Image (cartoon, rainbow, N blue to C red; front, side, top):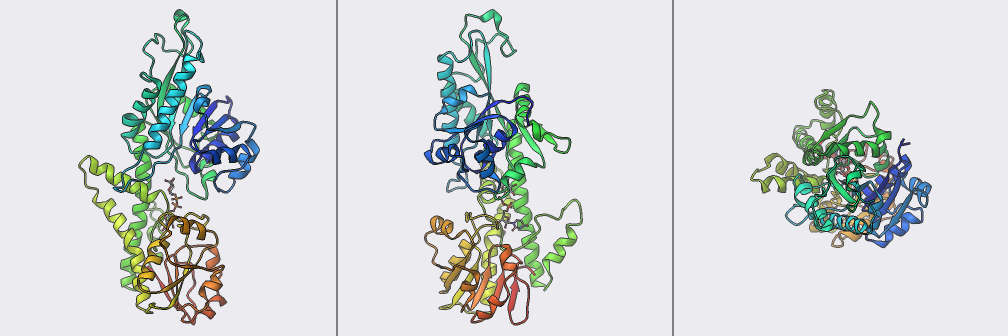
Length: 467
Ligand code: UGA
């Protein structure tokens, strides 16, 4: 619990915004979630999380109607000391970011502050400080070049009021007949949450990254996250652009680490070497670390692709060719084709039933964005296979997002495998590790595993992608 509760608004009620809103309410802050869409607003006010994340429903239910409310009205920002922008930043076709939502959200925050100012929200002669914190992942120049000008457009002036003669908040006794004004600060505070563990990742961070210019902005960020600032959690204090670069570097490093272990795994496979044995050994070197060394069919999800692409586009924008990042993406794009090539070595799938196990981009989520299941199903269809796919939760999501995919959905792995001439594993759901007699009903027991979840066993032709 915080010592000093603050009024905080959070613009955007997606998975980052809602997780943040619920956790900050749990710290004891007064939180208002703002979204232009009716659905998340209604959900939060009804005490339900608008998205699925373990632990989130409970937090929203506990605080909704108390110190967590939601609204479509930006006016709420004027009562807050801090506004977080947690708005979507979708990718454009060239990989660069579409920051329209961030831009219009920033402008709306400025407008709301200007309206409140005109209505006398700030006492005459005083300066009230308001901190706008960019939580969304944006490329390094966006905070200064896009967000600040957008807030200024909304405000109708510079972030810092010109008339301010005092540097101390509330200390303007000499200007008692000048109307009170907001001084707006801008900061960045990237998130490192994983889908499926967002709440626990937020509450147990490896690090906190605060990007700001003015000292008061840093103090205010500390006040917001006070319960997390223990001796064990390093705080990185830097400028807004560097903070965002840290976020990109973090994801680019992780994505490249997977592509590197995938490439090493591909070489291992050519020599009949088990890449997992190699990975375990190199992971013992502290400089390498044991995590994110699971080779296979590659990364998916909403973040790695988008962030690596945005960083590549940002690099090219300044005339730098990011050769290694390009290669990381190329390796990731090739892994599904390698999986299908391995399958081709054992069966000609034309006209045959092939089971695809797993559609989600990783276990524990129904999200299929950039799931490796997409190119795998496409490749199977091109080969003339009849695809039968099973996933415990992600069938609807993949049908919505990728309506061109042709497959029959099975209600269980057993049903998918029954009569199949081959099976490919795309997602490492725990339940696949327990499959056993289910393989007996296959017409031809050929299994190509892209995630190392199935055990080798007698009677099955088993191929691991990199082992
Ligand atoms: C990722 C980062 O891990 C988070 O730190 C970051 O905050 C987040 O992106 C974001 O930018 O929002 P997430 O996309 O939820 O989180 O998923 P991860 O758990 O990192 O997995 C990403 C993909 O990598 C999955 O498809 C997974 O199967 C794959 N992966 C992961 C591997 O193929 N091998 C590994 O060893 C680890």
